[in-house]
Image (cartoon, rainbow, N blue to C red; front, side, top):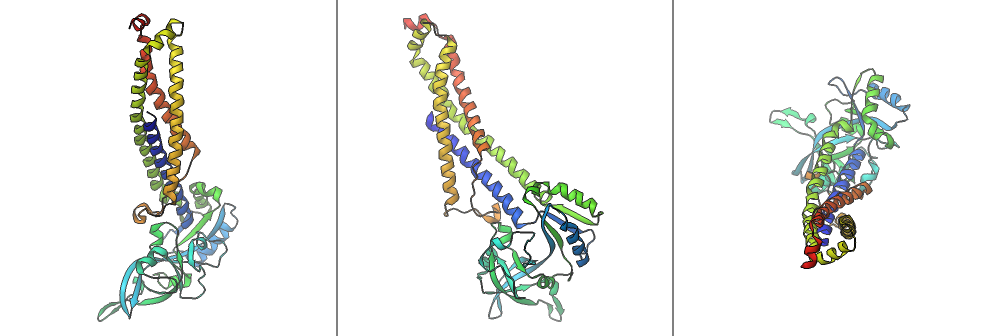
Length: 386
Protein backbone atom coordinates (compact mmCIF):
# COMPACT_ATOMS: atom_id res chain seq x y z
CA UNK A 1 0.00 0.00 0.00
CA UNK A 2 2.66 2.49 1.08
CA UNK A 3 5.05 1.81 -1.82
CA UNK A 4 2.33 2.32 -4.43
CA UNK A 5 1.34 5.69 -2.95
CA UNK A 6 4.96 6.84 -2.75
CA UNK A 7 5.70 5.93 -6.38
CA UNK A 8 2.49 7.49 -7.76
CA UNK A 9 2.89 10.72 -5.77
CA UNK A 10 6.60 10.95 -6.73
CA UNK A 11 5.72 10.53 -10.43
CA UNK A 12 3.05 13.23 -10.25
CA UNK A 13 5.44 15.57 -8.39
CA UNK A 14 8.23 15.09 -10.94
CA UNK A 15 5.90 15.73 -13.88
CA UNK A 16 4.32 18.81 -12.30
CA UNK A 17 7.60 20.44 -11.18
CA UNK A 18 9.24 19.89 -14.58
CA UNK A 19 6.17 21.23 -16.40
CA UNK A 20 6.00 24.26 -14.08
CA UNK A 21 9.71 24.85 -14.61
CA UNK A 22 9.40 24.56 -18.38
CA UNK A 23 6.45 26.98 -18.53
CA UNK A 24 8.13 29.47 -16.21
CA UNK A 25 11.51 29.38 -17.98
CA UNK A 26 9.92 29.56 -21.44
CA UNK A 27 7.97 32.66 -20.45
CA UNK A 28 11.03 34.25 -18.85
CA UNK A 29 13.23 33.56 -21.87
CA UNK A 30 10.63 34.76 -24.39
CA UNK A 31 10.17 37.99 -22.43
CA UNK A 32 13.92 38.59 -22.26
CA UNK A 33 14.83 37.72 -25.85
CA UNK A 34 11.90 39.73 -27.19
CA UNK A 35 10.45 43.09 -26.29
CA UNK A 36 6.97 43.43 -24.80
CA UNK A 37 5.20 45.87 -27.13
CA UNK A 38 5.69 46.28 -30.88
CA UNK A 39 4.68 49.25 -33.02
CA UNK A 40 4.46 49.06 -36.81
CA UNK A 41 3.56 51.46 -39.56
CA UNK A 42 -0.06 51.17 -40.67
CA UNK A 43 1.08 51.23 -44.31
CA UNK A 44 3.31 48.75 -46.11
CA UNK A 45 6.34 51.00 -45.63
CA UNK A 46 8.56 50.65 -42.60
CA UNK A 47 8.92 53.34 -39.94
CA UNK A 48 10.80 56.48 -40.93
CA UNK A 49 13.32 58.28 -38.72
CA UNK A 50 10.65 60.91 -38.03
CA UNK A 51 8.29 58.18 -36.78
CA UNK A 52 10.98 56.77 -34.49
CA UNK A 53 11.80 60.24 -33.13
CA UNK A 54 8.11 60.85 -32.42
CA UNK A 55 7.82 57.53 -30.59
CA UNK A 56 11.00 58.22 -28.60
CA UNK A 57 9.49 61.47 -27.35
CA UNK A 58 6.14 59.79 -26.64
CA UNK A 59 7.60 56.97 -24.53
CA UNK A 60 10.19 59.15 -22.76
CA UNK A 61 7.53 60.35 -20.31
CA UNK A 62 5.96 56.96 -19.65
CA UNK A 63 6.85 55.49 -16.23
CA UNK A 64 5.71 52.04 -17.39
CA UNK A 65 8.42 51.95 -20.07
CA UNK A 66 11.94 50.79 -19.28
CA UNK A 67 13.44 51.07 -22.77
CA UNK A 68 12.43 51.54 -26.39
CA UNK A 69 13.89 52.03 -29.82
CA UNK A 70 13.61 51.42 -33.53
CA UNK A 71 14.80 48.08 -34.87
CA UNK A 72 16.09 47.09 -38.31
CA UNK A 73 15.37 43.47 -39.21
CA UNK A 74 16.22 41.73 -42.46
CA UNK A 75 16.65 38.24 -43.84
CA UNK A 76 19.87 36.87 -45.30
CA UNK A 77 21.88 33.74 -45.92
CA UNK A 78 24.82 32.96 -43.65
CA UNK A 79 27.60 31.33 -45.64
CA UNK A 80 30.96 29.77 -44.84
CA UNK A 81 33.64 29.61 -47.51
CA UNK A 82 36.90 27.80 -48.01
CA UNK A 83 39.10 28.97 -50.86
CA UNK A 84 36.13 30.94 -52.29
CA UNK A 85 34.01 27.78 -52.38
CA UNK A 86 30.77 27.76 -50.40
CA UNK A 87 30.83 25.02 -47.76
CA UNK A 88 27.57 25.65 -45.86
CA UNK A 89 24.69 28.08 -46.21
CA UNK A 90 21.86 28.68 -43.73
CA UNK A 91 19.09 31.26 -43.53
CA UNK A 92 19.45 33.82 -40.75
CA UNK A 93 17.79 36.93 -39.40
CA UNK A 94 19.81 40.15 -39.25
CA UNK A 95 19.02 42.53 -36.43
CA UNK A 96 20.42 46.04 -36.37
CA UNK A 97 21.16 46.89 -32.76
CA UNK A 98 22.13 50.19 -31.16
CA UNK A 99 24.43 48.32 -28.78
CA UNK A 100 25.84 51.48 -27.12
CA UNK A 101 22.50 52.40 -25.50
CA UNK A 102 22.38 51.81 -21.76
CA UNK A 103 18.93 50.19 -21.87
CA UNK A 104 17.92 48.01 -24.80
CA UNK A 105 14.43 46.70 -25.64
CA UNK A 106 15.75 43.12 -25.37
CA UNK A 107 18.25 41.31 -23.18
CA UNK A 108 21.43 41.32 -25.23
CA UNK A 109 24.63 41.84 -23.24
CA UNK A 110 23.81 39.18 -20.63
CA UNK A 111 23.29 36.51 -23.30
CA UNK A 112 26.61 37.03 -25.08
CA UNK A 113 28.40 34.26 -23.18
CA UNK A 114 31.51 34.01 -25.32
CA UNK A 115 33.51 36.83 -26.83
CA UNK A 116 32.41 40.47 -26.72
CA UNK A 117 29.00 42.10 -27.08
CA UNK A 118 30.54 45.32 -28.43
CA UNK A 119 30.05 45.98 -32.16
CA UNK A 120 32.79 48.57 -32.45
CA UNK A 121 33.87 47.96 -36.05
CA UNK A 122 31.52 48.14 -39.03
CA UNK A 123 32.09 44.48 -39.89
CA UNK A 124 31.61 43.16 -36.31
CA UNK A 125 28.70 40.78 -35.69
CA UNK A 126 27.42 38.68 -32.79
CA UNK A 127 26.02 35.35 -33.95
CA UNK A 128 23.63 32.91 -32.28
CA UNK A 129 25.52 29.99 -30.77
CA UNK A 130 23.47 27.31 -32.52
CA UNK A 131 23.93 29.03 -35.88
CA UNK A 132 27.70 29.23 -35.33
CA UNK A 133 27.85 25.54 -34.37
CA UNK A 134 25.93 24.51 -37.49
CA UNK A 135 28.33 26.52 -39.65
CA UNK A 136 31.39 25.33 -37.74
CA UNK A 137 32.43 28.85 -36.74
CA UNK A 138 33.91 30.35 -33.58
CA UNK A 139 34.73 33.79 -32.22
CA UNK A 140 37.23 35.49 -34.55
CA UNK A 141 36.12 33.60 -37.68
CA UNK A 142 34.71 35.22 -40.80
CA UNK A 143 31.06 34.72 -41.77
CA UNK A 144 29.70 35.76 -45.17
CA UNK A 145 26.20 37.22 -45.43
CA UNK A 146 24.21 37.19 -48.65
CA UNK A 147 20.99 39.17 -49.04
CA UNK A 148 18.32 38.56 -51.71
CA UNK A 149 17.78 42.34 -51.76
CA UNK A 150 21.30 42.77 -53.19
CA UNK A 151 21.00 40.21 -55.97
CA UNK A 152 21.84 41.56 -59.41
CA UNK A 153 20.77 40.34 -62.81
CA UNK A 154 23.42 39.54 -65.37
CA UNK A 155 23.67 37.73 -68.68
CA UNK A 156 24.54 34.58 -66.76
CA UNK A 157 21.57 34.88 -64.43
CA UNK A 158 21.19 36.17 -60.88
CA UNK A 159 24.46 37.19 -59.24
CA UNK A 160 24.61 37.26 -55.45
CA UNK A 161 26.95 39.51 -53.51
CA UNK A 162 28.38 38.27 -50.22
CA UNK A 163 29.86 40.50 -47.54
CA UNK A 164 32.39 39.27 -44.97
CA UNK A 165 31.86 39.98 -41.28
CA UNK A 166 33.93 39.12 -38.24
CA UNK A 167 32.32 37.18 -35.38
CA UNK A 168 33.17 38.95 -32.12
CA UNK A 169 30.73 37.11 -29.83
CA UNK A 170 28.32 34.20 -29.52
CA UNK A 171 24.77 34.81 -28.35
CA UNK A 172 22.96 32.14 -26.29
CA UNK A 173 19.48 32.87 -24.93
CA UNK A 174 18.27 29.29 -24.51
CA UNK A 175 15.57 29.72 -27.19
CA UNK A 176 16.61 27.45 -30.05
CA UNK A 177 14.62 29.38 -32.66
CA UNK A 178 16.53 32.55 -31.81
CA UNK A 179 19.98 31.04 -31.22
CA UNK A 180 19.89 29.16 -34.54
CA UNK A 181 19.08 32.20 -36.72
CA UNK A 182 20.03 35.53 -35.11
CA UNK A 183 22.88 37.77 -36.24
CA UNK A 184 23.38 41.13 -34.47
CA UNK A 185 25.08 44.00 -36.28
CA UNK A 186 25.11 47.78 -36.42
CA UNK A 187 21.88 49.32 -37.77
CA UNK A 188 23.74 50.97 -40.66
CA UNK A 189 25.01 47.57 -41.79
CA UNK A 190 21.57 45.99 -41.44
CA UNK A 191 20.11 48.69 -43.69
CA UNK A 192 22.44 47.49 -46.43
CA UNK A 193 20.55 44.18 -46.46
CA UNK A 194 17.10 45.75 -46.34
CA UNK A 195 14.82 46.56 -49.25
CA UNK A 196 13.91 49.84 -47.49
CA UNK A 197 17.23 51.46 -46.49
CA UNK A 198 16.98 54.18 -43.87
CA UNK A 199 13.74 52.84 -42.42
CA UNK A 200 13.06 50.81 -39.29
CA UNK A 201 11.15 47.52 -39.41
CA UNK A 202 9.38 48.23 -36.12
CA UNK A 203 9.62 50.05 -32.81
CA UNK A 204 10.08 47.90 -29.72
CA UNK A 205 9.18 48.73 -26.13
CA UNK A 206 10.45 47.01 -23.00
CA UNK A 207 8.15 47.43 -19.99
CA UNK A 208 8.96 47.62 -16.31
CA UNK A 209 8.80 44.12 -14.69
CA UNK A 210 5.59 44.88 -12.78
CA UNK A 211 3.89 46.13 -15.97
CA UNK A 212 4.62 43.16 -18.26
CA UNK A 213 1.29 41.41 -17.67
CA UNK A 214 -0.54 44.69 -18.45
CA UNK A 215 0.93 44.90 -21.95
CA UNK A 216 -2.41 44.46 -23.74
CA UNK A 217 -4.07 47.16 -21.64
CA UNK A 218 -1.20 49.62 -22.12
CA UNK A 219 -1.16 48.94 -25.87
CA UNK A 220 -4.87 49.81 -26.01
CA UNK A 221 -4.23 53.12 -24.22
CA UNK A 222 -1.23 54.04 -26.36
CA UNK A 223 -3.06 53.14 -29.56
CA UNK A 224 -5.62 55.85 -28.82
CA UNK A 225 -3.06 58.36 -27.51
CA UNK A 226 -1.07 58.03 -30.73
CA UNK A 227 -4.23 58.85 -32.69
CA UNK A 228 -4.34 55.44 -34.42
CA UNK A 229 -1.21 56.26 -36.44
CA UNK A 230 0.55 52.99 -35.58
CA UNK A 231 -0.37 49.35 -35.42
CA UNK A 232 0.42 47.95 -31.95
CA UNK A 233 0.92 44.32 -30.89
CA UNK A 234 2.12 42.79 -27.63
CA UNK A 235 3.92 39.68 -26.45
CA UNK A 236 0.60 38.43 -25.09
CA UNK A 237 -1.11 38.57 -28.48
CA UNK A 238 1.85 36.83 -30.15
CA UNK A 239 2.21 34.06 -27.54
CA UNK A 240 -1.26 33.68 -26.01
CA UNK A 241 -2.06 30.47 -27.91
CA UNK A 242 1.25 28.91 -26.82
CA UNK A 243 0.79 29.61 -23.11
CA UNK A 244 -2.89 28.64 -23.19
CA UNK A 245 -1.89 25.32 -24.73
CA UNK A 246 0.77 24.79 -22.07
CA UNK A 247 -1.74 25.39 -19.28
CA UNK A 248 -4.19 22.97 -20.87
CA UNK A 249 -1.49 20.31 -21.28
CA UNK A 250 -0.37 20.74 -17.68
CA UNK A 251 -3.83 20.14 -16.23
CA UNK A 252 -4.54 17.24 -18.59
CA UNK A 253 -1.24 15.70 -17.48
CA UNK A 254 -2.15 16.26 -13.83
CA UNK A 255 -5.54 14.61 -14.35
CA UNK A 256 -4.05 11.58 -16.11
CA UNK A 257 -1.23 11.04 -13.61
CA UNK A 258 -3.70 11.39 -10.72
CA UNK A 259 -5.08 8.04 -11.84
CA UNK A 260 -1.80 6.50 -10.66
CA UNK A 261 -2.84 7.45 -7.13
CA UNK A 262 -6.31 6.01 -7.80
CA UNK A 263 -4.70 2.71 -8.86
CA UNK A 264 -2.49 2.77 -5.76
CA UNK A 265 -5.58 3.36 -3.62
CA UNK A 266 -6.92 -0.07 -4.65
CA UNK A 267 -4.24 -1.46 -2.35
CA UNK A 268 -5.70 0.68 0.42
CA UNK A 269 -9.14 -0.87 -0.14
CA UNK A 270 -7.77 -4.41 -0.06
CA UNK A 271 -5.53 -3.70 2.95
CA UNK A 272 -8.39 -2.24 5.00
CA UNK A 273 -10.74 -5.08 4.04
CA UNK A 274 -8.13 -7.65 5.02
CA UNK A 275 -7.49 -5.91 8.34
CA UNK A 276 -11.20 -5.88 9.19
CA UNK A 277 -11.45 -9.62 8.50
CA UNK A 278 -8.26 -10.46 10.45
CA UNK A 279 -9.27 -8.31 13.43
CA UNK A 280 -12.98 -9.10 13.51
CA UNK A 281 -12.66 -10.83 16.91
CA UNK A 282 -10.96 -7.72 18.42
CA UNK A 283 -13.62 -5.55 16.81
CA UNK A 284 -16.35 -7.74 18.30
CA UNK A 285 -14.83 -7.43 21.79
CA UNK A 286 -14.60 -3.62 21.45
CA UNK A 287 -18.24 -3.48 20.37
CA UNK A 288 -19.17 -5.61 23.39
CA UNK A 289 -17.61 -3.18 25.87
CA UNK A 290 -19.43 -0.23 24.29
CA UNK A 291 -17.47 1.05 21.30
CA UNK A 292 -19.76 2.31 18.53
CA UNK A 293 -19.20 1.74 14.81
CA UNK A 294 -18.37 5.42 14.46
CA UNK A 295 -15.64 5.21 17.13
CA UNK A 296 -14.14 2.12 15.49
CA UNK A 297 -14.14 3.85 12.08
CA UNK A 298 -12.33 6.84 13.60
CA UNK A 299 -9.64 4.60 15.12
CA UNK A 300 -9.01 2.67 11.92
CA UNK A 301 -9.28 5.77 9.72
CA UNK A 302 -6.71 7.67 11.81
CA UNK A 303 -4.22 4.84 11.40
CA UNK A 304 -4.77 4.60 7.65
CA UNK A 305 -4.64 8.37 7.05
CA UNK A 306 -1.56 8.74 9.25
CA UNK A 307 0.27 6.14 7.17
CA UNK A 308 -1.12 7.64 3.97
CA UNK A 309 0.01 11.20 4.78
CA UNK A 310 3.53 9.97 5.60
CA UNK A 311 3.59 8.10 2.27
CA UNK A 312 2.42 11.24 0.42
CA UNK A 313 5.11 13.40 2.04
CA UNK A 314 7.75 10.76 1.27
CA UNK A 315 6.57 10.63 -2.36
CA UNK A 316 6.72 14.41 -2.72
CA UNK A 317 10.22 14.58 -1.21
CA UNK A 318 11.46 11.81 -3.49
CA UNK A 319 9.81 13.49 -6.50
CA UNK A 320 11.40 16.85 -5.67
CA UNK A 321 14.82 15.22 -5.30
CA UNK A 322 14.55 13.31 -8.60
CA UNK A 323 13.29 16.42 -10.42
CA UNK A 324 16.26 18.38 -9.07
CA UNK A 325 18.62 15.66 -10.31
CA UNK A 326 17.00 15.86 -13.76
CA UNK A 327 17.59 19.62 -13.86
CA UNK A 328 21.32 19.43 -13.06
CA UNK A 329 22.24 16.42 -15.19
CA UNK A 330 23.98 17.01 -18.51
CA UNK A 331 23.41 13.59 -20.09
CA UNK A 332 19.90 14.14 -21.45
CA UNK A 333 19.05 17.33 -23.35
CA UNK A 334 15.80 18.55 -24.81
CA UNK A 335 15.54 18.98 -28.57
CA UNK A 336 15.56 22.74 -28.97
CA UNK A 337 13.91 22.66 -32.38
CA UNK A 338 10.93 20.84 -30.83
CA UNK A 339 10.64 22.18 -27.27
CA UNK A 340 12.13 25.69 -27.85
CA UNK A 341 14.41 25.16 -24.80
CA UNK A 342 17.38 22.79 -24.73
CA UNK A 343 17.58 22.25 -20.96
CA UNK A 344 15.26 20.68 -18.36
CA UNK A 345 14.10 23.26 -15.83
CA UNK A 346 12.16 22.68 -12.62
CA UNK A 347 10.17 24.97 -10.37
CA UNK A 348 9.00 23.97 -6.90
CA UNK A 349 5.70 25.73 -6.34
CA UNK A 350 4.14 25.51 -2.87
CA UNK A 351 0.55 25.74 -4.26
CA UNK A 352 1.32 22.84 -6.64
CA UNK A 353 2.75 20.73 -3.82
CA UNK A 354 -0.30 21.46 -1.65
CA UNK A 355 -2.60 20.56 -4.55
CA UNK A 356 -0.87 17.18 -5.00
CA UNK A 357 -1.09 16.59 -1.23
CA UNK A 358 -4.80 17.46 -1.16
CA UNK A 359 -5.74 15.30 -4.18
CA UNK A 360 -3.76 12.31 -2.88
CA UNK A 361 -5.26 12.72 0.61
CA UNK A 362 -8.84 12.82 -0.74
CA UNK A 363 -8.28 9.70 -2.89
CA UNK A 364 -6.79 7.77 0.04
CA UNK A 365 -9.59 8.91 2.37
CA UNK A 366 -12.29 7.72 -0.04
CA UNK A 367 -10.45 4.43 -0.63
CA UNK A 368 -10.34 3.82 3.13
CA UNK A 369 -13.92 4.92 3.81
CA UNK A 370 -15.48 2.37 1.41
CA UNK A 371 -14.36 -0.86 3.19
CA UNK A 372 -14.90 0.68 6.66
CA UNK A 373 -18.61 0.71 5.94
CA UNK A 374 -18.51 -3.08 6.51
CA UNK A 375 -18.24 -2.41 10.24
CA UNK A 376 -21.98 -1.65 10.31
CA UNK A 377 -22.75 -5.15 9.01
CA UNK A 378 -20.64 -7.06 11.55
CA UNK A 379 -22.80 -8.95 14.13
CA UNK A 380 -21.28 -9.18 17.61
CA UNK A 381 -22.76 -12.58 18.51
CA UNK A 382 -21.73 -14.15 15.23
CA UNK A 383 -18.17 -12.81 15.63
CA UNK A 384 -17.81 -14.10 19.19
CA UNK A 385 -19.23 -17.55 18.33
CA UNK A 386 -16.75 -17.97 15.54
